[in-house]
Image (cartoon, rainbow, N blue to C red; front, side):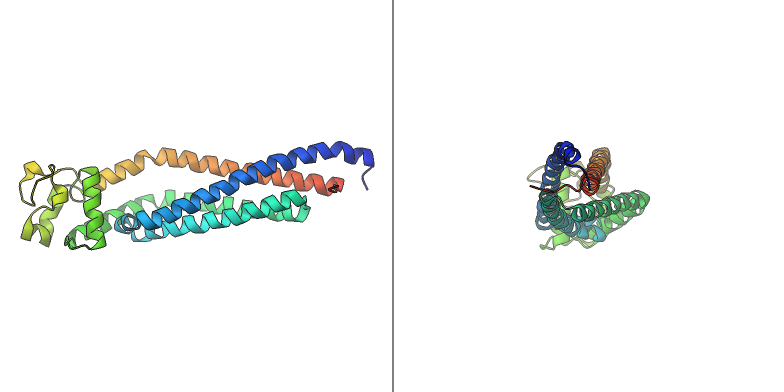
Length: 245
């Protein structure tokens, strides 16, 4: 049993650890809310784009929703464990944080290793959407039009990709390929955006990879800080038999 004087000296240290860990857990909880909101927004607003570029990518919003929900629940548990100053609960919290960190690490490695396969699959799906384009309200066709209007592009690699489609043979270029507002679908290359959409989309994604990588690294480091704080508080409580008065 620790002496009263030693316990009194340790109290400020443990209180400090508790305060910092509570701040960390609150921020961690907020990140869960943000992930949940982004996942719901992606499912509602970007579902067509995910399925257009890569069929497997349609699961991304669900992954964000599940991850955000787990983080919210885990953050709530961590706050409760910290307030209770329960050593075993804190150890369990640290274990969960470690598992999330490992899952993020594995996901990052898989994404890096299979990045070329993902890119090739996305291009194949985009070309498939062009061949099946019908301009009758089909969600893939609508997604193609939205991307072409937004990025001022036409086709997968360039505007000539449309020459292989039934729609082009029958009606010419779709309106979303035109450079001007009042351009009607026709085969006049001077009035059609010549750059391909897939190239532009991939250029934008690749240009943001550094930002995404930096954010991912920061989140991973943030997880490590939480694991360290949780372990230190649990260790201090166990060794000094700290009791809340």
